[in-house]
Image (cartoon, rainbow, N blue to C red; front, side):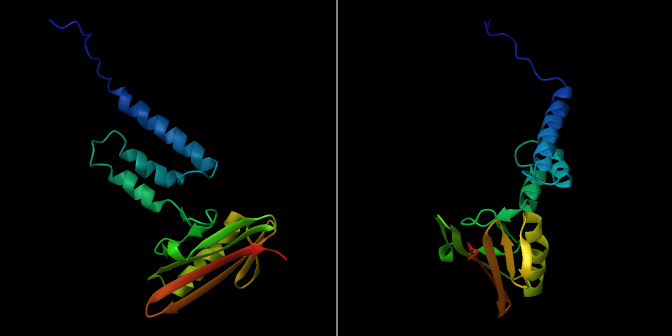
Length: 161
């Protein structure tokens, strides 16, 4: 006879408690602007407790989460665009950050312009002209071009003179 204590299996409420904890944490992060929106969180937690290989809800929620440029990690990267990391460059100088990032994809140029026109103000950038934004002593310039069905985005960041 084995001297090991009997295994205790979690009761039926265990899965619900775990889901509630995950949902609470996700809502708190969302409130702080650090996680997915509540609607995305609900999708992700619907899969909580499912077996391996059944976490499609969490994969979908991850795909819906905002992405950011690698070099300038406070600038959003529009869905459908791929960052061109080999072309990106960024420096921190005493006068401020200097950088240039690129992305491309098969997204219409007007949709890219609209996305950044709507999204950048949510990150505190003030529009000063059609392609220029300013925030906290920094200037952001956006250039969008389209050729042969591929749109290229260039974002330049520099200190305000």
